[in-house]
Image (tube, rainbow, N blue to C red):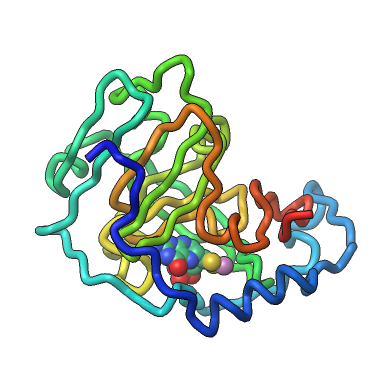
Length: 222
Ligand SMILES: Nc1nc2c(c(=O)[nH]1)N[C@H]1C(S)=C(S)[C@@H](COP(=O)(O)O)O[C@H]1N2
Ligand SMILES: [Mo]
């Protein structure tokens, strides 16, 4: 598949509408300034010990037997992998903090999977590739600059704290982008599109910041 249509963009749910209203109201914009060197918690965030679940109200049933990853667009070598082919790729581990725009943060999450840098060595983005769109099997999309996608800590992950990623947290495979708010970390990842222009995703089209750096408190679009 090389089109950029999504199978089913979910209908606006109550939570979606509420989060859009927060963006419009600039809620949770605290104006505080963080000092990343000395302070591990970005401005306006609070620490949680559990792991909240956030989605659009649909948790697609995908398992390791049926899952596929389709990498397409502005690449020299497009691929379609099943779980076996994906898990035969080089494996990396990242321990990172999660920062959700709804103000919770969770420390020390150990994710395992394929790094996006290793993926790029295989699919070889074309010179004109500038952005990436992550497509998920619940119809969710989110966008990243190629540079943010290729950060050295970005993983296409299948395991969290030693156990297979659960369905509610995006299993079998999700993206993890530690340095940006967690809405950039697409759950139930199914397709990775390399693009020659930016294409804002689900939340980016609904009032959220195009980049989402928690240390700069990039919560909402201007
Ligand atoms: N496919 C998909 N990915 C998604 C979302 C979603 O609704 N669908 N929500 C995003 C948001 S807003 C957040 S905060 C995190 C939540 O991940 P978690 O449920 O594992 O905490 O997933 C992100 N990735
Ligand atoms: Mo979120």
